[in-house]
Length: 143
Ligand code: DQA
Image (cartoon, rainbow, N blue to C red; front, side, top):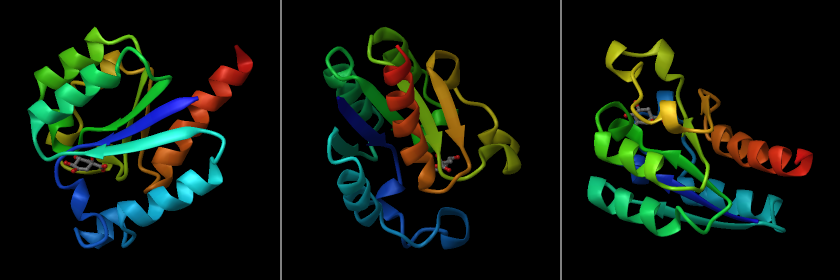
C-alpha cells in the first residue's frame, strides 16, 4: 500500500528542538528505521514550513494514496486551509502528534483537522507515526 507522512512547520528541527518534549532523534533517522520495518509498504515523506505547500501536497496525494499520516504541527491549531484540504480529499488522514497536546497549553487543545481525520494519535513520541501506519494496515486487513 502507498502512504505518505506529511510534517508541518518546525518538524524539520526534530532532534534539536525542545528535546524534553520532542525527543532527540531526527525525523530522518526515525523514517529510515520505519521504512526498513515496513519494507513491504511504499512510504514517502514530505515536510514544509509553508502552509500552502502543505495544502498543495495534500491535494496532490489526496486522491491516489491509501493513507496520509499528517502532523500539521502548529497549523493544526490555526489552519482552516489545511482543514479544508483534508475535508476535500478522498484519501483517509490519520492526524498525529508527537507530544500529548492535551497536557500542554490550552491553545494546543483545539485541532481544526481532527473533525475530518479518520482518527487521531497523540502523545507517543515518534512512535505516534508508527501507530498511525499500523492503524491503516490493521483496518485494511480487517476489511
Ligand atoms: C506537535 C504539537 C503542536 O502543538 C506543535 O505546534 C508542534 C508539534 C506535536 O507533534 O506534538 O509543532 O504537532
